[in-house]
Length: 242
Ligand code: GLP
Figure 1 (cartoon, rainbow, N blue to C red):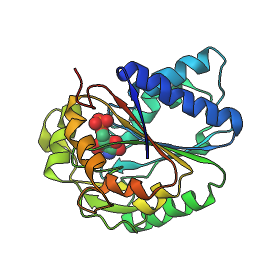
Figure 2: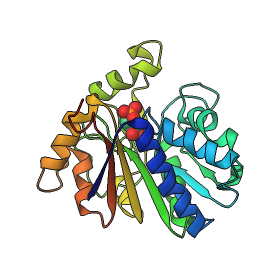
Figure 3: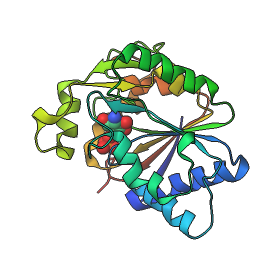
Figure 4: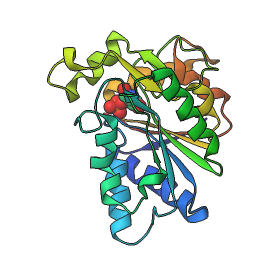
């Protein structure tokens, strides 16, 4: 794992966007693995800016999102489908058929997981995966204790994750109890992973990750130590600075 420390979230977002634009310029049909949450918002804003300036086109890019809440309709403002639409897809020239997000309202969730694995398997070529870091070490929605060899699966969200994500909802009771997430095995098959870590609330999680000497299912992000090219982009606050 490499670490790049950025002055603040804006600088981190510009750096992440540069990695993404660079990947697209090298391979216009590359695959972007995308994350949700607050941390990547600035990166998406920066990508929209660069698209508007004519610096990048997403016309051939394919995307695969990490996760989705179970039970939220696509139109629900809190679904990750809407999040992606609102914060990135509706502002760029990506083609709808190239976007992949799990369907949290599928009648048969096990079938939906298989369908998602099949989509993943068809996405050949270079893949750059963006990841956020959960305070409990989750990546995607792979909560502590998730076996590293799982593919797409449904997961019961932990109390701490539901609390952390309650800020997006009216109250905690509205946060769905479960989600569909890409598994760790598939996260690890990306060519390059960018782990975005910002803010003082992530300081402890980043410290735990850096201090662990081996992958440990109790703190899923530690599996990234096994990956061939993971770059951590952290801001000063996440590194314990003011
Ligand atoms: C959420 C998402 C993750 C995200 C993480 C961190 O629960 N499922 O994909 O990376 O938690 O979110 P944030 O950036 O808001 O701290």
